[in-house]
Amino acid sequence: MKRMIFATGNENKMKEIREILGSLPLEILSMKEAGIEVDITEDGTTFEENARIKARAVCERAGEMVLADDSGLEVDYLNKEPGIYSARYMGEDTSYRIKNKSLIDRLEGVPDEKRTARFVCAIAAAFPDGRELVVRGTIEGIIGYEEKGENGFGYDPIFYLPERGCTTAELPPEEKNSVSHRGNALRQMKKMLEQEHLL
Ligand code: ITT
Image (cartoon, rainbow, N blue to C red; front, side):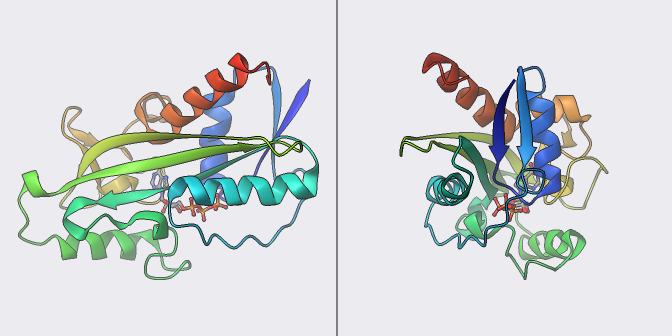
């Protein structure tokens, strides 16, 4: 079976990636499982750049195909903050209870129509011969007024989907994956890899 290393240290992402790509005849390994430790400086200015930086850094070390995910939440009223800094917002070690409360507080008094936001996910693939592929998936929603739901991770409890009447943290995992930025980006990447006979 072919191997694919996913350059992420985020266990929540890894769980979703396995759920979304689970049907492929592919052994999907986290960096930890592949025994790779690389200190990566995410100094790109876009999700795509950061995804490529992560995939390339690990590919150089591993010598085989590597995929990476760079993702985050863009809140329109806050000029698309926290954006590429979503993991680092208020400090990497600050709990999401506090980060989520901060975003809700910063939108105090802001009406629904101005609370628009999206999750963005760039997935990059890097190959030992220097080739790279990158795709982007998004999901649109609004920032809620309180945390709701126990599923998912990160900003999911405040990311409300008006058409579903719930947050992405209230969706069962398979439903989140079927509509999410990550599900969307990974399905695009899968198609590209198949078209290029790389899977
Ligand atoms: P790696 O770089 O090791 O993959 P990371 O957590 O640092 O892990 P990012 O730099 O891509 O990853 O930051 C992504 C952050 O965006 C993540 O930590 C969450 O805060 C947020 N995020 C991304 N996807 C999300 C989702 O599906 N639900 C909730 N929050 C999400």
